[in-house]
Image (cartoon, rainbow over all chains, first blue to last red; front, side, top):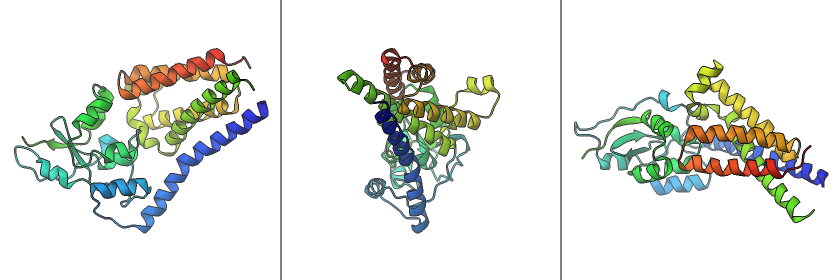
Length: 152
Length: 117
């Protein structure tokens, strides 16, 4: 009984360790053989399911993420402009009236990449609020990615 | 192996895998976790947030491994329950906070029903 428990424990340790380490290695390999592409949302979903990455990404904290140059009207960034940034390599989303560039956050989101990828190019207010609504820390982190306001 | 023992084993291995995953993740991709370090922890410990993440990751890996192997289950479960309670309190009433509250209740149950080592 005790021996079986220890064997199962080792399997769990190695299995979980493998799950954490192996995807990182396979992503690195994928990054080294693929160039920068322009994916659509469906392509993003597809690449997500096949565990490949089209653009090398450097992990960075929200506060150090450089703000991109945004061509917006004085009234704000339009939904059409946001919709054009619906890829893993350029992921913008409007949340509660503000526009955010979430590109650098995709590989770093503790809840997984998919949660951010599904917000690219769309209004993510409902999804963000239902997941993190009221969370001060999440709002603070989100503010680090702000690049403008949504055009009315 | 009776039903209670199997249930305890499932609970222990399930919780162990959660802490191992998050622990390994913090050790291998610590920068992604820095933003989650509370300000009071930095002020209290007087060490950089990145070091706190690494220390926390190491703690979770060791605790998770002990749970997985079945060593010191009760004290480790109590320690992890305290650790998780702090996280739940810090995160607050959000989807993640509620999920962690579920983990906390699992850890308390494990601490209560596991045998003394």
